[in-house]
Every structure is written in C-alpha cells, then in structure tokens.
Image 1 (cartoon, rainbow, N blue to C red):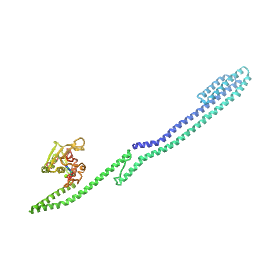
Image 2 (image 1 turned 90 degrees about the vertical axis):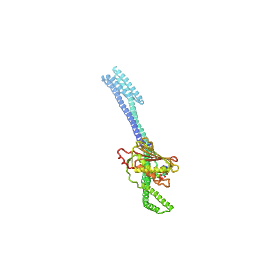
Image 3 (image 1 turned 30 degrees about the vertical axis):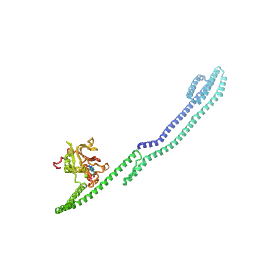
Length: 504
Ligand SMILES: Nc1ncnc2c1ncn2[C@@H]1O[C@H](COP(=O)(O)OP(=O)(O)O)[C@@H](O)[C@H]1O
Ligand SMILES: [Mg+2]
C-alpha cells in the first residue's frame, strides 16, 4: 500500500468518531423536534377545547337569558349551536385515540343541553314558566354542569400528563440514548486514534528513523552498512534509492581507490623505468664496444645476447612509460584505411616468418574518423601483436581486419539502429582464444597471462580508443579465435582535414 493510502486510511479512521457524533446529533435533534411538535399540538388542542368549553357556557347563558325575559335569546340559540359545533369539530379532528372517549362524553352532554333547551323553551312558551325554570335548574345546574366540569377536569388532567409529562419522559429517553452513544463514541475514538497512531508510527516514523540512522552511519563513512527497505511504499522507495546511492558511492570509491593505486604504481614504475634507461644505454654501448674488440666467437655470442636482452628491456620500459606518461592528445581527421595500413606496415616481416595469412577488407566510402593517428595506430599495433602472439609458429593461422560503417550501440559490429554513425573495425584471429572467466580482466593494467608480457597492451589500446570517443569490445571462443571490435565515431564535417602525409 502506498504511503498516501495509509495516511488517508489513518485519518479516515480518526474522522469516523466525529462523523458518528455528527450523525447522532442530527438524529437526536430530529427526535427532540418531533417531541416538541407533539407537545405543541397537544397544547394547541387544549386551547381549542377551552373554546369548546366557552361556547357551551355561552349556550347555557342564552337559556337563562330567555328564562329571565329576553325574547331575542331564543333566536340566538341555534347560533350558539353552530359555534359549539364549529369548536367541537375543530377539537375532535385528529384527536388521539386516548382522548376520543372524552369527545364522546362532551358530545353527549351537548346533546343533553340541546334537549333540555328545547324542553325549557317549549314549557316557557306554553306559559309554564316556573316548571321551565325548575327543569332548567335541575337539569342544567344540578346535572349537566357538574358532569361537564368533571369531564373538563379529566381532559385537562390528561393533557397535562400526556403532553408535558410525556414530553419530559421522551426527552429523558433521548438524553439517555445520547449519553450512551457519546460514551460509545469516546471509546471508538480512543480505539481508532490508537489504531491510526500505531499505523502511522509503524509505517512512517519507524522506517524514517531507521533511514535517518542509516544516513548517519553512511554519512560517517561506513558505506558497507546494509539498508533493508521494509515496505513497498514511498519510504521503501526512498530506502531503496538510498541503498542504490550508497552502492554507487561504494563502487565509485572503490574505483577511485583503484585508479589512485594505479596512478601511484604508474608513477613509481615511470620513475624506476626512467632511472633504468640510462644505465641500460651505457650497458648496451659498452657491450657493443667490447664486441668489436673481442675475437673469441663464444664471447662475441655472449655480448650479442647482452645487447639483445638490453633491447628487449628497453622496449618494455618504453611500454611502461607510454602507459604512465602518455603524450598529449592531438586529434586529427583521418581515414581508417590509412590507420590500418600504418599499423600493419611494421608487421609484414613477422607475418611472413610465422606463416600467418592476412586478409584486409576495408569498405569503400567509409567516413573519416577524428582520432590522434599516432595513438590509434599504437592501439591497433597492440591488438595485432596480441593476435600474432595467439598464433605461434609453426601452425600460424589467419588474421583478418575488416572495416565497415556501423553505429555506436551495444555490440558495435551489428550496425543496428541507435547511437551515432561511425566506423566499426574488427581484428579477428584464429588463435588460441581467451577463457570466458578472464575476459572482463583483459583491459586492466598489468593483467597478463604471458611471461614476456607487460599486461599494458590492451589497457593502452582501450584508453586510446575511448579518448577518441570510441568503444572497444573483445569477444572470444577458446580454440576458435578472438575478435576485437573497435567502434569510432565519424568525424563531423566541420572537422579540419588531416594534413597531407601526416602518417607516411
Ligand atoms: N588475440 C588474443 N588472443 C588470445 N589472448 C589474448 C588476445 N589478446 C589479448 N589476449 C590476452 O590478454 C592478455 C592481456 O593482453 P595485453 O594487455 O596486450 O598484455 P600482454 O600482451 O602484455 O600480455 C594477454 O596476456 C592474453 O592472455
Ligand atoms: Mg599485448
């Protein structure tokens, strides 16, 4: 999992309790509002009932007014009936089931009042005023009004209990539920927080600390300190990149140590070689002088041998000096054919002596190359002399040199796409070949398998090819022969043409 995802997960875990609290707040808010709405409705209904009560009281008052001699009161009575009906309908519409029985009771009383009124009006109109007053008193004052008062009491009591006390009980339940959910949320937040911090510390803090420690150790110079990336996330990638950087640093330090070592060996070798050259020259001159003065053939042979060995020593010293103190690089535009011919010119005699067949095929219309001609000829000479060493007499063999157009990609002989245009030079021998295990070491300075060798030939050749911007590769099969491939970039058109006869 990537670090980004882990962080997102951790924060999401921490946000969950907050979300919970939010959802809970919205839910309890809705419940509270519903409870308050219900309370409001019940209170409103109880106010409507007060209007019913009022209307019924007015109705009885109209009866009394008629009895006390107000003839208009009788016409008013149907009006009071309509008012009572209006308020009663309003009160009973949508009445909760627990109050329906009260509505029935009130309607019953109202029906009784109307019946009593009818009887009272009839008696009164018939002239029986006392009887009418008596019935009104007995029915209205002594029976119906106390009954109505009882029902009223019951209705107000129930309103009180159901609305106010019910609302209080409901609110208490809501608060209790809220308390439980809040405690659960606190617990959840604790668990989620611990989990998230554990996740973050495991995937962030610890690997970062390890990396910091590794950086401190590597920074203090211990490049061999092992860095093990634990995760596949960005920090793991950072650790891998750091490990890679450390490895590269280690390699380049090793390389640096190696080249410093080589440089000091080279300096020392150069100093020794230089110091040896003059005494050797004196030795050679003395031996040659003595040879002219001595007549004994055996002694002459010995002196010849001294001169020959001194020449060989001098050649080796020249090689050593060439490697440790190369002349300055002078690049010029040059044709490959001239370079090959120049390199081969010194070998004609040797080739004949050893019975080695030579085949040279240089393609027509090859681009020129930009090299230091003296050095590149030297490089080719080293390679050809190695090839000859690999094909000793009496068997000899075949030496082939080919040049064609090619590009600078891997496997320079292929001529495939990619890389810059240039020339590929192949020097192929049918000699003993090189074991695969020593192939990578061939170009190291002082690496040699020959007792007579200095191990500098290929090191010099590779250096000269590479300083001209080219590449040198060696392929070999033991028993079949060796191919040295050199790729050189083509000289750009604006490069100065080579001076005439510079290689004669
Ligand atoms: N054409 C070749 N055939 C076989 N072995 C070769 C060839 N070229 C180079 N080598 C091997 O590479 C080694 C290094 O060559 P070089 O650097 O020229 O040093 P030297 O010729 O002094 O030994 C040689 O000792 C030899 O073992
Ligand atoms: Mg050599």
